[in-house]
Length: 175
Image 1 (cartoon, one colour):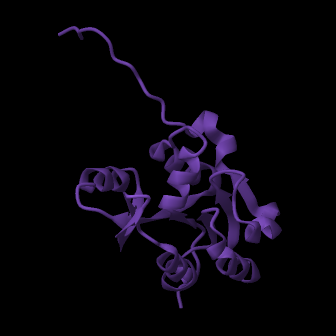
Image 2: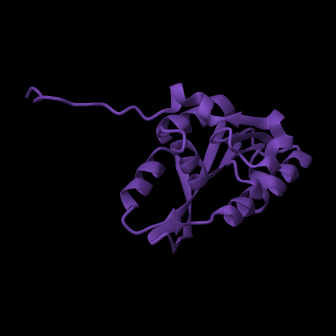
């Protein structure tokens, strides 16, 4: 069995993170977020669990270039009020990696999600003394996670440093 490194790993539910931040009216800068995880929590490896969709290859390349390790899940389509929605449920994969596949490779884990489906994982990591923090996108996280309030960091409260800034380029650039 491998001895844990001095490094921490992050396990990120990308859909919960993205939708949770967007519901607050802003966009997360994934490059800044990766640096935040590295600098604040000594995260060596950041697993980003994400649905695989054709046409998003350049986004996946950019995320990998920022230092994320992408774990893909096939997506499914369904209709809500006539509109096609896409879902890539990554819960099982995130739990499998955090509690199984790479459990002995990291010292502490950071779980990034407000989804109550991760209650058992968070509880397990606490019992094993391997949970560092639970990062939720906003204050609307599952009531099942409330008992872990001491470990919770709300990402929406970090908006000033993690927001994607849109730059406006006007006029003609000089040669």
